[in-house]
Image (cartoon, rainbow, N blue to C red; front, side, top):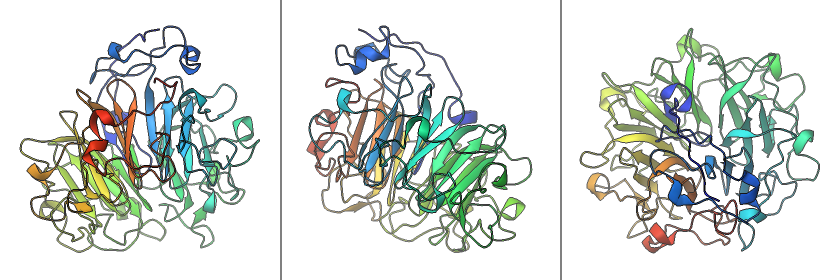
Length: 488
């Protein structure tokens, strides 16, 4: 069987902006992976036939037998396949993989490919996007409904209780209810933080649940929403981001959220211990009075600068600007801001706007998308290359470890000192996701490669050896994750 390609140009990430972090999508290509396999998807999964990657036009379209979306969490990964099925692998102690067990998957040979079971989303349901939190996952279904599973601390799953889902038989499929977003409400995008989740609704508003600050008023002085009956649906208010402002894209860090609004401004709320909200202080926002709406000021990016793509990490935030430059603020203990020092930005007055330096990506280099992990950042450049900086203990930067566990905190480490992440001869990245200590990229042929920490098999390579600690781990020597068969 060979895959047919059908290319149709679409708006990327809602209204044309790209977004990424703990739960968001970065698209470089403008092609829609919506064609069907010539002989049907079942033939691929049975291992009898595989897609022919040579049919793909790298950089312009995605092979239809490939991956639509990727979610990268803490010690686990998930992928939305071309037909809307979801497959997850890695750490699974609380049911994060949605397989009705607590068994780790992907750390031993023979557990990936056709042998990896898909998440049961219920009769007739298929996914279009995925959001990965600390230890929970939410899928956006083709109907606009949302289903979540895994750890349910403080109502992270939005089901009116704190019972985990996906760790025992009988908890998934039709037994897993969708999140109640309210009468007539459907979601168009998702973002997942460590212990909370947000959905962008079709009217451009946002609803959040789990552990706060969530950007909504406290309920009886309780920072949690969704852990008790009667807190979801029409009882759950929308996040007030200002009158007439629709959300274009939404990203989540460990405990903060940032929204790219329809006027290309950025507003952030949640925890702010390192200045990750970009307000020139360390005061959290999103739980008290006079903190949201018009009281929540847009992040100052500089004169004439607007955001095109945003990312939220552990306690830092980044934006790709309208000229392709990148600015980052918040925690900088490991050089994740890329400013050749370890000083945080945004936690004191006079550090934002024109006073915030741009990240030196190298001569003539511009970014089209950005993602942020716990203490590292990766940029997808306009030429399809990926480059990363920050903490590199497990090889998450994909550049090897020459002399330091961090890059970006010392002179000479940015700009021409940055290395391209080698993913193989002729490979171009079309989607980039990162989590706590590992990163995954979708390539032009529709397959994915992952590198970094691999304690629980989250790289999907049938072992627990990290990749990227040595440069020899990367390039053509880094295998693609097998999701359909032993070949693809």
